[in-house]
Length: 412
Image 1: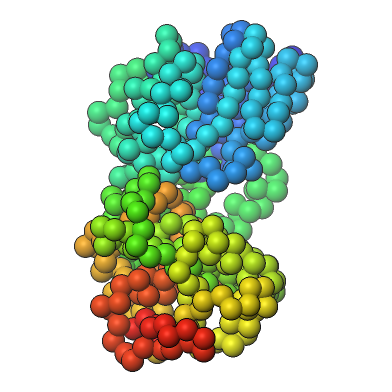
Image 2 (image 1 turned 60 degrees about the horizontal axis):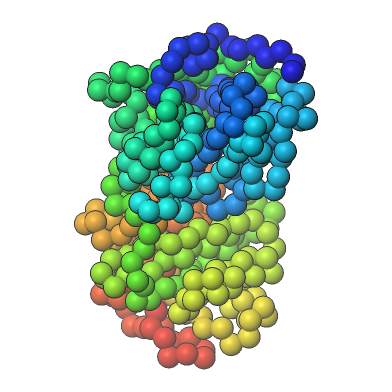
């Protein structure tokens, strides 16, 4: 095995015994690399070692730590000790490292993790209080541990309340690590850091120094409210729509907003999926229709102010006759968003899972406009979808599309 040098900041995580181990901080600090190395070395030294790498939401293995753990095995020249497979890693002595999303588990299904030695929670700032409550008593094997790595987001997040409040568990070791603690900090990231220090002053401390995310003054959404009503599973849906807000240009940095929302049998709104992407008109149309099929949606909601005919024709070129609801914007983005923001404040909307990019955009919308970079395409799509689902918000005559007698939103 190639010798591994443990950075000074992480040495307490290696030397001392603890039930809970945590490392938080900014980008480029080496937190994930440290835990991946701990995991691999623990697996070599403990035959039959069983571990699970956890995220709140894991839509594919590309979003998991599988690649990082596999690369760590190679870096330590331990390839002969492990069998890296497409969805898991077999460890010496018939052990196993697996990868999962907490949103995929119920109180019953999570019992399958009872014999795990180590659970490593990646991107732990996204971990819900419900998931943390499920995970802690489940990891119960003799000497078992739970590890957390995260870039802090809000002091109200479950992991910060658990490991950074005044009453953290006594058997915990928590360290803060930033780029300046990482002796292997790459020059490429140093260029990125210096750029942000000069041009992204407001968010620099959050990104690189591991400070809590700055709150935009006058924002009409906040993460605490979004998080307070987050759900792991939706109820039965009475209606589901997909809203698409294509970017103006393929060459720009903006994405095509593609958001799936529904109204549950409890008459509450639910954000069910965020499939926003870059790409050509054909690609965003195919993605939108794939979401329509996946969720058995009632319709696709589009705005017709800017390229509306193009949007409709692009969708119909992929799926002729698909049901489309056309809406027309008569007010600014932030004005259209305010009634939907009010629904969140009233606790009438929940996100099923975590949609970090959407939520970041939401928290940058103020009564004076959008304060983020580019266009809030994800928020725009979500607002169109929710307004369509809450017809009492309608303030104008309904828009009828060219094939269906379908009422549009108050923005139509």
